[in-house]
Amino acid sequence: MAEFFVLNTGARIPSVGLGTATGKAEPGVVGAAVYAAVKAGYRHIDCAPQYRNEKEIGLTLKKLFEDGVVKREDLFITSKLWSGNHAPEDVPEGIDTTLEDLQLEYLDLFLIHTPIRSKKGAIPTPENFLPVDIPATWGAMEKLYHSGKARAIGVSNFSCKRMEDLLAIASVPPAVNQVESHPGWQQMKLRELCKSKGVHISAYSPLGKPGSPGSMGKGFLSNPIVVSVAEKLQKTPAQVALRWGLQMGHSVLPKSVNETRMKENLSVFGWSIPEDLMAKFSEIPQVKTLRAEFVVHPQGIYKTVEDFWDALL
Ligand code: A2P
Image (cartoon, rainbow, N blue to C red):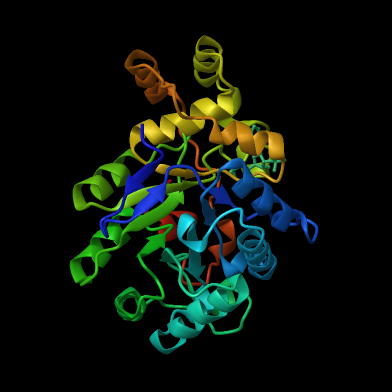
């Protein structure tokens, strides 16, 4: 298993990246985590303005370059267009703010963060939502791709239906769909569709967000199948979950601010899950951790979570 996948642009996306949506981490924690991760060998950092830490990450990247740890071209940096910038005329400002905060001249990948459009500058709560116009937003994303500011463009949180709609109108096909995926939420239908269209899947929350309310404790990391495979291979359940993702053909973006766990999550090369054990993963119950209930409102655009995910749940 190589340490990268090849996108439909020809670029190489590292198989393991560091997620930076670390919620209420104290100032400095994410910056320190990114520094430690790059020193440990991570080459992909997944960012977003919504995580409210791009300035801190920008300072860290600058320091990493100044300290000679890596060069810009050694890193793969992803960021995302937030909901308030979906209007085509606001898309350039979306990437420009991110580039300024990250102190970069270009992104390796720029994604539409979510198929939610909200009023510019407003808190993204249902009363501030507007109907999405993905063809218009995508047209502006394509311009960024042609300008070189985004070396690849893609989407995040897109269902099969939204992918099909986008593929039908795109002149530049999306390179990536970044979605929740792990042994406890395998996304088989979406996976097949994306594979057949050459769209790479990148998995956020590949550990199922252990400890979060949605995962109810350790989530699928305590599932007996995952635990027994880990015991057989003398790996941790987290490593088995990440390795499962790589063998399924997608890159993984585990989040950690802890150096030991970060290194653990990168130690998924040079060994593999044999086919007979891979087959057992199909028996794991499927539960979506991130349901996005915050988008639902009886008078809003999404009246149920199923509306938002296109009946994926
Ligand atoms: P921490 O930052 O203390 O390591 P996900 O990427 O699926 O959303 O999960 C993120 C959560 O998983 C974080 O709370 C992180 O905590 C924890 N985590 C990261 N790596 C591991 C690991 N190898 N084993 C257990 N928990 C982990």
